[in-house]
Figure 1: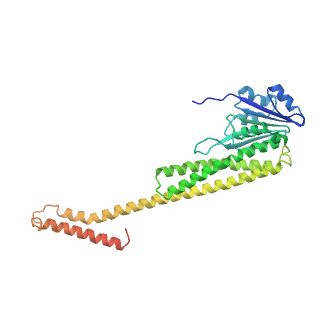
Figure 2: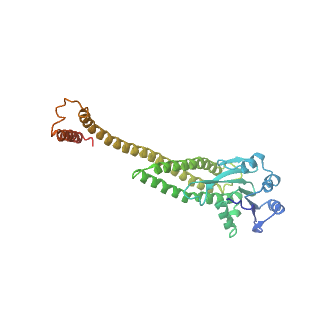
Figure 3: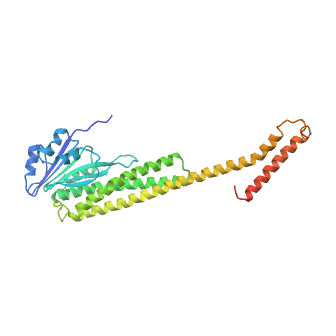
Amino acid sequence: MCYRLAPVITTFAYSPASGVRAVTGEPAIREALAVADGVTWIDFDHPTDDEVKLLKTVFHFHDLAIEDCVTESQHPKVDDYGDYLYLVVHGVVGNAGCVFMTEELDVFLGSNFLITFHYEKRRSVEAVQTRLREVSQPIAHGPDGLLVAVLEQLIDNYEPAMEMLDQRVSAVEEDVFGRPNKKTLSDIFALRKEVLHLRRIIYPQRETIHRLARGEFHQISPQSAPFFRDLYDHLYRITDLCEGYRDLLGGALDAYLSVVSNRLNEIMKVLTIISTIMLPLTLVVGIYGMNFDNMPELHWRFGYFLVLGVMAAIAGVMVVFFRKRGWF
């Protein structure tokens, strides 16, 4: 049974005069947003329908942006709504066992606020919140600097997942060239599915970060642009690994089919040789099994042993012939 966690709205407000503080309640949030040189970070964790309405009543976000926000399984993207940006990014699911999975994080970025929205716990968000309770550096750099901190943590979480994926791909390659079986084929297809999922996520996510890094949006300051370019470089390396895994799994599948085909050919060759050797012996047995009255050897005392000897000689000659031809 799965229990839904209680909804939580975590709000951090920063101003050069008062530093970082936690605020609660809609009036306090409105007050924090009114500070001209301040930065407000609101994290919606398991929000209720009433809390989702705050996106409309307090921030006046576009209905399409809110609709995309509450609908999960969106591809990574960035939409410019003039006064704010709406982003969808994906991080790696923690504690997912041996299966590569990603989780969606929706983000609204304005001139003095950052909003993160999700229906499950997000390690990247929690890590930055922990840092904010100790130091004010991430939020002091503005909402775009705070976004950099969240995205940096989110992308860093890909590293152990990619290492796990690399180990699984290596293990499958060893199985293919060892003793491949049906489980090996299942592992190859399962890994290909996970790598394709990674590919569908990481390419649009790389393009999203690239758009943030090249100064396309006024919400991203020139001071933050180099940090987004660094995030883009990290994602570029991940895409290279993704393509490498895709090629390796394609090669592993071809090798598996080749190994299985060669094994089947060896089996068929042995069975064919046995059948070929048995064919003349069956002919001899068939001839002496016809039970005609005038068969000369039928009542001969040594006829049975002579037939066995002839059959053994035929089989021996065929085995020697096959070996000389290199057929086995």
